[in-house]
Image 1 (cartoon, helix red, strand yellow):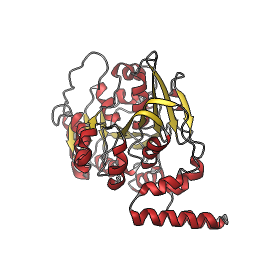
Image 2 (cartoon, rainbow, N blue to C red; image 1 turned 90 degrees about the vertical axis):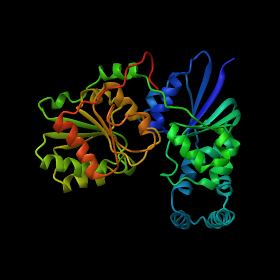
Image 3 (spheres, rainbow, N blue to C red; image 1 turned 60 degrees about the vertical axis):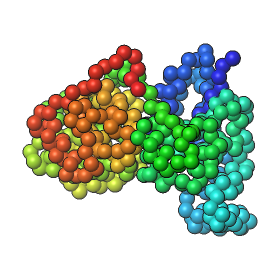
Image 4 (spheres, rainbow, N blue to C red; image 1 turned 180 degrees about the horizontal axis):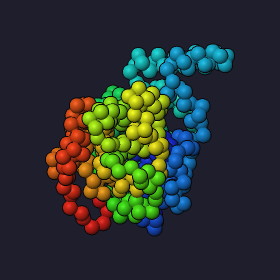
Length: 383
């Protein structure tokens, strides 16, 4: 009898959470586990990489409720007025007010999900994998029939507008709360001390063998092989969290100091336009290159001279774990979980999220030829 597991995520966009899910599924033997992925949206560059053995289910009602979850209340009410949905305006306003007065988000989420049917079937384990996201957590608790329920936390909860009051109530219904780094676990435990007995750590798994194999099978910087300078690489969504905006003036200063450097960013996101404007402002259009989404970023990791992770915050940062597979110099900002990847001055450099510190660290590596000692390799998958 196979163990039936359901994972719930927002979508399968190319990101660390989604990649870690695919890695986790790859570790679960097909003859022992029957796996289902539930998604709010049918989209994402990783959709084709979901194994055929995995059942996929979409929440058909999500497009109808999405604006109530993500848009400001005034915008929602304005749209309802334009649609002449006056009864819905009254109901929405009443529910929203009641939820705020009682300080109970579940009142609002009950209303949002009232027309969404329960997930069909019975499961052994149900996981709110894209966490923390209140809607997914609540859906798993209220709409899924499972013997055990697990909440996954992929971020530093002090950096993302975490609703402590809602989590304190909702997370009681989970049998286990898993955080993707030990430091992240300590932060969550201090934030939700009453739930300390449910909180544990599960480090996102990666397969170094698979990563190296993919690095040898795809294209990287070959089209720019004529460039003989230093190639810096950053991988991550183009967004405020990942800190690409800090990298731009750093590169401009490196160029001004006479270094032959190009900085490549793999990833896509809502910050692209702002980053393009900032790149133009600093006059480094030829040196700071936004490569867009790459399903296989590993050839670039293999071929770069320096990997830099300039994030404002993370929960674990799976791309940093992947970059370590190639024994290249690594510089990272000091976010939650970074010290589980890097030993400062031994396997990399850890600096503050600060323009001067990032610049100085990069200058030290490329100017003085600093060698970073890689961690010893171990057999099998690295976690």
